[in-house]
Image (cartoon, rainbow, N blue to C red; front, side):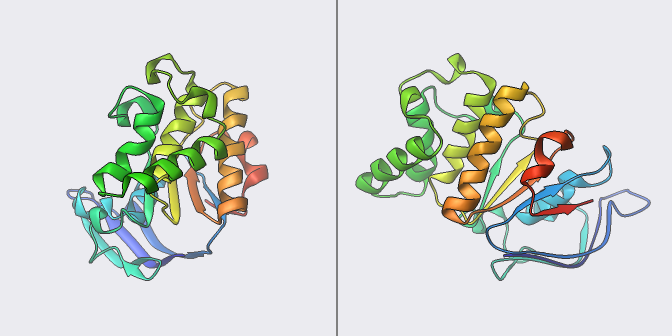
Length: 214
């Protein structure tokens, strides 16, 4: 599903690359954990998957990143949006509506999907992520774990094949973290979504990982 072919990324003004000769393959339907100290390139690695690097960050990318056969050097993020969903570290920063159900529908509205398709996918996502009881709740009234699940659901309704998350449990207590990780497990095992996530708290996540990238 995702292939890095000898990828080296250097940001403008940097004296050395942030990533050097990364060569790996991530199969479809795996949960992949990206680990490393702060500043070692985890976020750069994630952003290379949906083309934010280098299209928006600038710099140079040597080698190739392929997502379902598409070369990210030739496809900016908007042309990969149907393939790759990105969940921000702070869910509230990415929300554009006020209510759970509206947030789940927003991405599909932007893509011009038919109302009946939108309704079906919202219901499916509410059930899959255990959000049905929260459908009419204001987003600001939710707990951290609930917000994170809504953020995942808002991306999921557009049916991406790849889900990218940057430290999704960093601001959550252990109970909320378990909620989110259980939801991600369901996406991998029930829907075959490929999940790539960076995380510092390895003790919470490593047991779920099919592959670890250091």
